[in-house]
Picture (tube, one colour):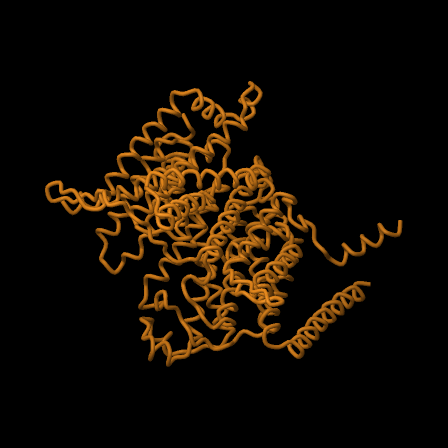
Length: 347
Length: 293
């Protein structure tokens, strides 16, 4: 009996991974150019939204400072993946020589960037955890601005506002969706485990959670560590897709889009975050060409830069007013959800 | 010593702007717990109205000030009616996200309709020039902005301390439900508060135009961050505290870069956040008493 159960389990996993690999293979085969980039951006947005959801949705500490974490991780990884001739010859960055003379492949760079992002995220959160509610939001907003200002003002290391170029195009569909699916799997498992229940308990009522014997500081740090690690990975993937990194890349507008994703999808829901990411990706990347103006039946529509941010803002405000819990609320769409749905239909 | 004095006097202009914004900010903050991140865009709306009156239509300056106030009040009330009223009472974080959304909407619509470039402000001739006080130089425009702002601040503090309206506002900030059940028209008080805070933002906006000589779509961000930090330092809801903290922030920011080596001048935005963290960690209730008291 035990043996049968375990084999079912293994078959489920093998089949699931097989289906995912097959789908990605088909995507890579048949999508190209704009649509392939779009699919990768969607994956990156899924990573960002789910990892922001861990802190904002589950433990209820509303951070708008994840742009700073992305910036730190992206710069840390960039120093390792930039070609040697560009770092040393053209820019002459003031880095330690072992960094200047090496160019790593993507996996070690991702790990280094992720760890730097996590460390920065935890340094951010240690003083900010003393703040509560809205003050925490404001503090993390400040963190975002602080990181941006620092990156702009040390030109001998970061090349200042000019930014870095000449990245090797490492990001492909396998990296993006591999990490996205790993993240979805990890968060799904965490949500069902003791740690995830502790996170959600802290989000519902921190005082009660503490009385139930949950170590608040420990679990907040776990949540921020996990969130910061994957946010940094998202930033690194983004940089190696766009092939450009400058201090204003992850400013408040990007953070605002990610916040819009989780608010629209429903705070605390993993599937909600994916839906929100899909909606915002549609708005900010598919509809973006409208901003540049076009002509329709001989009628010239002028260029309207910033139209998409306006639309996302309107969507966000309307959702918050009409449906404050977002599309999914805290529910999830899973296989069990469908099964329950069918059963209620039959009876 | 002269250098120090000169720096302090130079920052009085920006200090007045921050003080007015922080006073408006702290009033809505104390009254309904609203962290109005769209206040910077209300401020920008006033500046753009004044810009149209002054530079495009070439009308006199007093009309620009008046229309700047009107523009700010209209945008402020619209934002309150359409965005903040439906979610009132649903927690600070929801209000914060809504404010962030509204501010993005307004800023990007301005970029869309006009553009993101600097717009020159026509400055009346009597505001040009300097007074010399010993070796210290005082710009006429700084003086002509600082004195009215001082008067406005005194009137505002008197209004909140001694008039019936001020008493109503204070009672509302203590306990909204109690005030309501004692028969107070809370809706009216909230609208009047929004009008006052938007009008202060409008005056600050016109001052910004005169001091820097130009306005642009992103001008609200920097000013509102300063004003927000000032309102936290001054004690949430304390108008006098916010005004004093506004001047402290502006003067401190100026001195911070005046005494740093010249290649670190770009670090100016860090100053307010350093102050913010220090205050919130060591004295979370602000330098002065919290609440409109």
